[in-house]
Image (cartoon, rainbow, N blue to C red):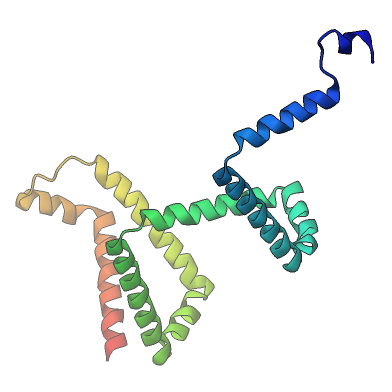
Length: 186
């Protein structure tokens, strides 16, 4: 033996033996039981992973991680979870009511061929031009109306409205519109 080992320093073998003895003294039967249970569960998980052929899915999972798709999937799952948590029973009932009403309307439109007639009518270019013109005119009128002072009323105010050529032209248009509408009904 070397001088340092004989001068009171224990050898490595003695240190390992001392460590094992200390560990053996420190371990209780309960600790040994828990370690054995944990080791058994770990082996069970490994066996299930092996039987489920997870190793065949790992390349696909690796690609999902590498291109960031796995993060997107996780974010979508969180979004759906948050939406589910945010919806109350009343909101779900309302959404179900809206869906029911929409399906009922669609069923009524398809039953009497009205939907086909409406779509055919709306696909005509002249109808689309009229709808766009009406929409733009309605928006412009709404913006202009908000800037007008409140109407004073009275006969003189009505007389001024009737005297305006633009108002007279609008009344002619609505008169013709009403006439055409009556002709459609008969």
